[in-house]
Each structure stands twice: as C-alpha cells, then as structure tokens.
Amino acid sequence: MELKNIKVSSVDMEARKTLDMRSGDTIRVWQKIQEGEKTRLQAFEGIVLALKHGKENGGTFTVRKVVDGVAVERIFPIYSPAIDKIEVLKRAQIRRAKLYYIREKAAKDIKRHMKSEILNERQSGNTDTSEAKKAKAKAEEATETK
Image (cartoon, rainbow, N blue to C red):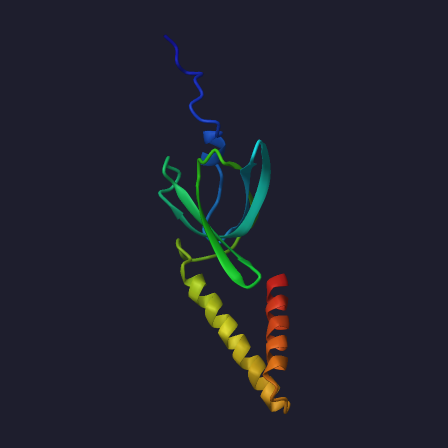
C-alpha cells in the first residue's frame, strides 16, 4: 500500500521550507481574502521583526508596516493556506534575531522630530501652534515616503 503521493495541505511545504527569510528583511506577503463567493489577493508589505519556531509546522513570522503614521503588526503562520506567496524585497544587515526594539525606536524618532519642528517654529517667531502641526504633518509624510 503506497501512500507517498497523498497531499495533506494545499501549501507547497518544500517551497516554504526553502524560503530564505530573516529578521530585518522587507517582504511582501500575498494573502487570500474571501469576500462572499469571491477571493482576492491582498499584499501586506513590511519589515520582518521576528521568526519564531524556525521552519517547523507551528512556525510564525511577525511583519510590521506603518500606514498613515500608525504602525500595524501582523503575525503570519509560515504554512498557512491563506498565504498565496511571500516575496523578499530587500535584505537588511542586522545583528539581532528579534527586532522588537524598532517599536520604541520609531516612537522616539517621531517625538524628536516633532520637538525640533516646534522649536524651529518658535525660533522663527511664529507662535501659532497650528503652523507647527502643519509642519509636523509634512515632516511625517516625508519620512513615510522614504
């Protein structure tokens, strides 16, 4: 009785095992979204913060992206059938396995940038805080586009 050609999962397990993904990489995860009777693909692009449990069956990876100044993190199972494909867009040279410190680092950078914008407005003689808020919004947009 030969049972070698039985397919247990709709996921290509070998392709996911050979996927070279590390913390710090910028990746795009294509996820299948079911809306009524139709299915569509939606991309989630961001930085890999952590890989947990390696390439085992219960392995997961955490992806973080920033949308309109709000950080969004998602945890994906590596072998989830809801994931169509995973693309590695950019490699990063890092020294840690888990990049959880990026959460605090991003908040500190934003605060520092806001403080410098307010100081620049005060030095220019403009005491109107609405102008400082507009300058802060422009600076945040500029950092998001980079």
